[in-house]
Amino acid sequence: MNQKVYQSLSDIVPVVTAHNFGEKFVFLSQHDTQTLLTQFAYSKLMPGEDVEQHLHPTMEECFYFISGEGEFIIADKTFTIKPSTFFRVPANMNHALKIKGTEPLTFVYFGIATQ
Image (cartoon, rainbow, N blue to C red; front, side, top):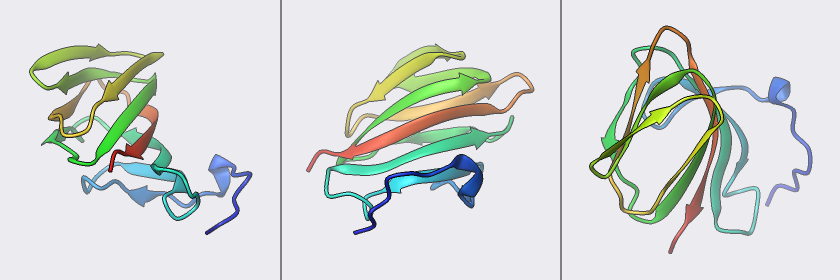
């Protein structure tokens, strides 16, 4: 287990998201903690890098949007994304993300294992 207690965004090398586009800066992963946290990261998606509908059978996700605009579809309901909005996606629930406008969508998120 890694004993990270401090991390600066400028020190993190970005990686491609699990959805194969955009970039994420991982502050903590499941290998850094003995908790049920799967990942805590900062992410940036550019216009056109929409996240298709998917689900995580054993992980709940929480998102806090910093900049940009879009739509977050959770189950069959569409929500507006704007700066300072928070969303929780329960495990095993379909969700998708669509970017609106010309600005990048930036956010922090974390996943929590449910099993």
